[in-house]
Image (cartoon, rainbow, N blue to C red; front, side, top):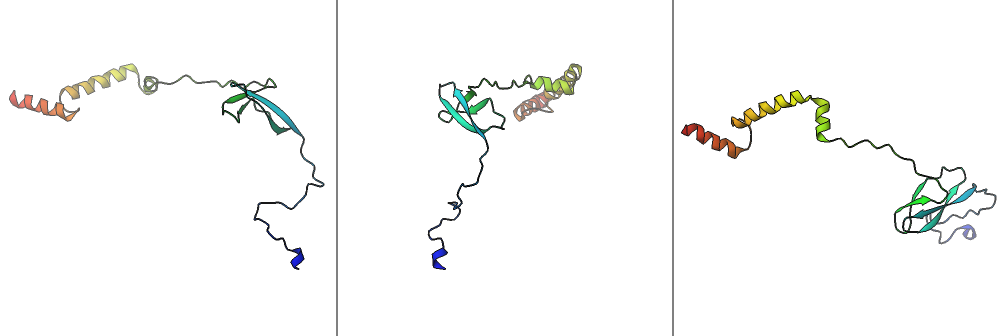
Length: 127
């Protein structure tokens, strides 16, 4: 019994199976080159979709495929400003009316910073 035990085996660290009778998937080498001039190859399955861009293992920059595969152009939406989003919800006429209302409240001392309220309250008492 002692002859068949595995001595010194690490947990999950080593496989005792050999590679006899195993057929590996067909592979190919795909070349990439980054802007820094670093060239490298990645091993991929023959059936895999080859990406046009891969991260360079030396500098981390984007590397393009040397096989001539071009990256897909993404349709970019124009940047929406706060004004654009506001106009989606209200018309300019509505915005003008709201502005007039708020300015009247501000000038009347009903809204706004506290130091403006105190100044207006003193003027009202004096007048």
